Length: 333
Image (cartoon, rainbow, N blue to C red; front, side):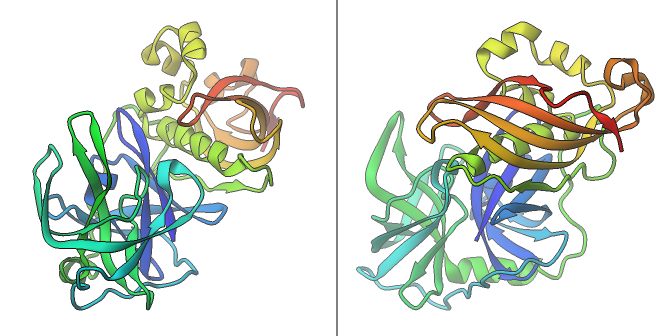
């Protein structure tokens, strides 16, 4: 199972995907829509990924990782499961750690109006799913994929309990078989003024063992991904409102970044009680920048940092409340 971290020019988000081959991950199309960058985390490390096929009408997509990944490769069913079949949804709801939730097939050939269009020929299920489950597999007791989770029942501001939907496995298989031989990926969105070359991907590792380490790592990964892609609006939204106010707006904040971009990061320590809303996170970070934009007038074009991030839980995710350098200034690479 993989957790997708997707940055667009205006926002960021997470979703779920599952391996069908060592470097192919199935997910929902809306998870990767308008992506400027995609990373997929398997365990505590992340890999770069690109979209090789997407179908908004069916809400399914296929992404390719830039290197093979070790993990369970799921098999797609060749037929729809009957009503009342026991099933389970696998995924990362609300950006939290992996979950397994059980339910049944409630109906077949269902429809759902997502606001962007009507999805048809869906599996309806009473399995509990939430934001972040999208793109994850709905599996039967034999471990085969019956469908790909795409949405829950939402009417206006009302979210129905026990009503969710998945694209059927046969429909997914037909699309995937067409896409997986493609060598040219779908182009990422260009946010403009991205300082990082090529894809802007950087490896991010979580080695801290705190209960909140992976959740904090998600926010920091998305923040760095936004910086590298010039998606400054998205990256700025990962600062607390109080910290945002000190800069004014995303345009003023991004001026301080100059030519800097992230090349490698590791979350090595998180300090504070697991239930606290304010924690500190120590990160080993490597950056590249022009000499003119180096820290405090140094001429470093490659810098190794030990940064302490102050992190605040806003009720939905961890936001950056501040930064400090208790271990000293950055050193040259």
